[in-house]
Image (cartoon, rainbow, N blue to C red):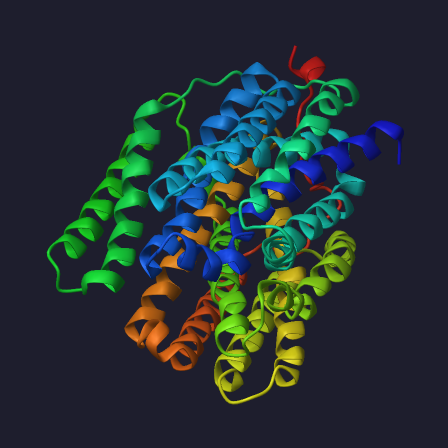
Length: 464
C-alpha cells in the first residue's frame, strides 16, 4: 500500500468515524440528558433524528458539490462545518437548541461521509477496493456501536456536553492534514437540484414526523395520518420530478439495476434495525441493570468489538465470493441476535445477553461492507461518486426510520413505565427489519465475473 493510500484511508476513516460516532454517541447520555433538560421520549428521539435526517437529506447535494468543486476541498469544508456545529451542541442549554445544532452537525456529516467514500474509491483500484471498504466500514460500524461506550466514558467521567467538545481538536488536526496529504479529484460536472432536495426533505420529514408523533399523541390524532399521507405524496412527487429533471439529484436510472436497488434496500433496513437497537440497548443497561453510563457502554462491547474484527475480514471475503452471501447471512444473523435479546432481555442477567450481542454484531459486520460494495459495484464508472452518496443517504434514512419505528413500538408497549416489556418488543421489531433486509439482499447480483470489474471513480486528470 502506497504512502498516499495510507493517508487517504486514515483520514477518510477518521472523518467517517467521527461523524458516524455522533449519530449515536448520545445513546449512553440519553438518561442524563433526559434528567438535565427534562426531555420526553419524543424529544430524545429528535436529538438523534435531527442529526440523521439532516445527514440524509444533504448528502446527495454534497456529493454533487464535491464532484464539481473538488472532493478533497469539499471534504475538508465538511469537517469544518461539523466541528463548528459540535461547539454549538456542547453549548446547548435546552432541548430545542440541542436539536437545532444537531441538525447543523448532521449537515456537516452529510458532506463528510460521501466525500470520504469517493476519495477512498479514487485511491484504491478494484483489486484492493473491497479490502479498503472493509476497513472503512469496520471503522464506521465501530463508531456507531462504540458510540454508547465512548459516550458513557465521557458522560460519567466529565459531562454529557463533552461528547461534542471532543470533536473540536480532532477536526482542528484533520483539516490541515487532508489539505496537505490527499490529492484533489473531481467527477463529471452536475448541477444542483434544489427542487428535488426540497421534495425529498419534505417527504422524509413528513413520514418521520408522523411515526414519532403517532407514538406520542396516538395514531388516531389527525396530524399523524396527515403527516404520513403528505410525506407519501411528496415522495411520489420527488420521484416524478427526478425522472424529468435534466440532472437529477437522484438519477432514477440507477434503480434499473436490480442489484443496486437491492443493495440500497438492504443497507436501509440494516441501518434501521441497528440504529433503533443501539438507541434502546444503552438505556436498557441503565434502567434495568442499574448501570452508570460508563458501565452501560462497556456492557455493549461484545457487540462493538465484533465489528472491528469481522468487518475487515468480510471486506476481503467479498472480493472472493461476491456480496450476496454476506448480505443475506449477515442480516439473518443480526435478526437472530435481536430476536434473542428481545426474548430473553427482560428475564436474564447480563451474562445471558453476551452471546446474542456477539451474534448481532457479527451479522452487521458481515453485511455492512458487502451491501456498500454491492451498491457501488453496480454503478457505471461515471456514477460511482453519486452512487456512493446515494447509498450513504439511504443508510441515514434507515437510521431515522429505525429510531422512529422502534420508538413507536416501545411507546405503544408502555414506554418507560413498562421498560423491560417495551424494550423487548422494540428489539423484536428490529429483528423483523433485519429479516426484511436479508430478503432484499437476495436481489444482489452474484459474484462479478472477470470481465466485470468493480468501477473506479475518475480522477480530475481523467475528467479533464
